[in-house]
Length: 179
Image (cartoon, rainbow, N blue to C red):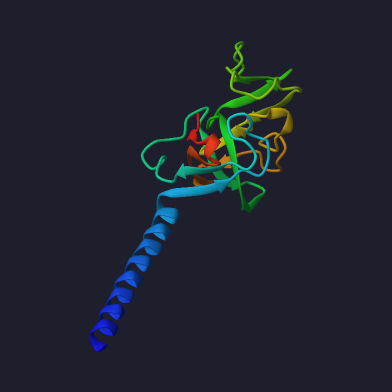
């Protein structure tokens, strides 16, 4: 009896170590490498749907700057306790102007390609002069998105970007890369 109790104790200790190690690894990954985000609204449809869960890469912008059209997870400029997911449209030191639903950068005569948006955007906004080290972001469902056009502080500072959206992992029927 003593032998089996001793073996059971070793087994419990081994299992406890494994669980503790897995928890520690999960915490490190979640705080250092991955952002886990749940999408509460339809502001990024059809790219990301309400209720989707996604992973974002926290390390994506360590050695490079964000690019136009990257989908990012960031702290809302008006309330840093809220995580948002939007698409980068305006880069540092650019001017973004929305005229009759079309987005123009730096007084270009050609609007940005917006073939990925949910429906044709309505309205005119701006111009917005994007500061150094900041970004102008819009949702893909532009007629139903609280984004740079609506915030008191319309720009996302680079240091407030938590990660680049990489993959929807839930629900199973939506699994796929974020583009």
